Amino acid sequence: RQVADAYKKDDDDAACAPGQLLTHYAPRLPAALATVASDAAADDAKSDAYLGACVVVDFHGRLAALEKPALAYRDLSKTGDAAEAAAALFETLRWAEAVPDAKNVFLADLSEERASAGLVAGVADRIFRAASGNLIEIPRRGVLG
Image (cartoon, rainbow, N blue to C red):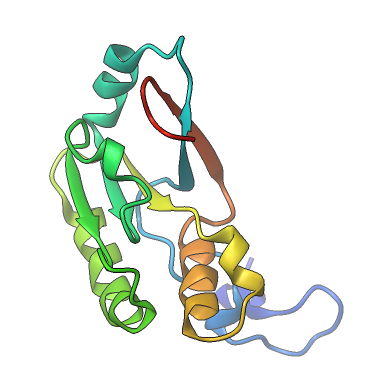
């Protein structure tokens, strides 16, 4: 298959911009939109071992419970500032894929914000594309759900 074929829309022969592809912002490692779910029966030690090979890219502390067990952690904006997050996103994704020994990248799930107006919707869309639409829920004991 020719490289140019990857940029064609399914419904016609018109080329589509690379930024419109689902995987446009995807890092070179497997990535997923992550949420943390409260689960009294969760085996935190088991998930910590798994997270030890994962890079976490957060937004406004949504995945703060994963900071310590993660191999590497960065928050796009601890204050929830969409402009700050937008400015940091591309560089942070490149950083995430360059972390030595990283096996996966988990990104804060902003799916609910994709339908909102403003810059946060754009950040949410780019994060969704970086994760290629993949989702993961990480159960943790003692986390507010």
